[in-house]
Image: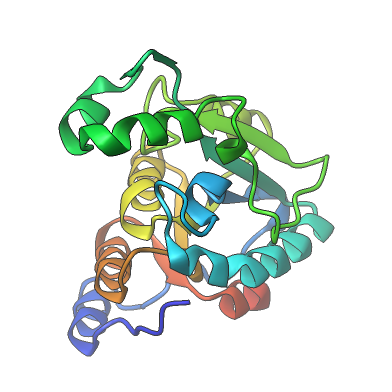
Length: 226
């Protein structure tokens, strides 16, 4: 788990602008969803093609927050990333053909096949049958065409989105940004997110708290759930 703290200068900037640090003073559970991004074998398993080692350290907090929110009538959405392909050509060539080396591309695409082992939620997590399960094919689960997540959340009366998962600064941040711009109230759960480095993780938290949502710990969320 990342051991970082938002810098004093960022806190001061937020306080000067909106006169309070946190957006959320209370959370109505039935209007809240915990959206868990990419906590699947492709990203969590040791040696996996897109491994984020720190992701394995956030599972206990995700489980604790999910259980508490579920008990209070909130929703848990498990979002995994899948790629369909024809040979070595994926349905997201703009990423795989540009940002991924040839020797890594095929292994990653195979791991992210919709029916592959890489799609399975990491074994230390505790999803329940009543939870929401969504597959996306872009960084953001809320960008148009990437998944059905927005429609599902709207249909369940969700107004507040708590973001957990990996990577903090890629799929989690992308989903948080789009969530805010779609008028959801968004919070990044700092100890339920993981990146490849402390600096990348912190950069996202400092960006989000200034422009896109709140940043809370698991304990802080549990205190304001009513």
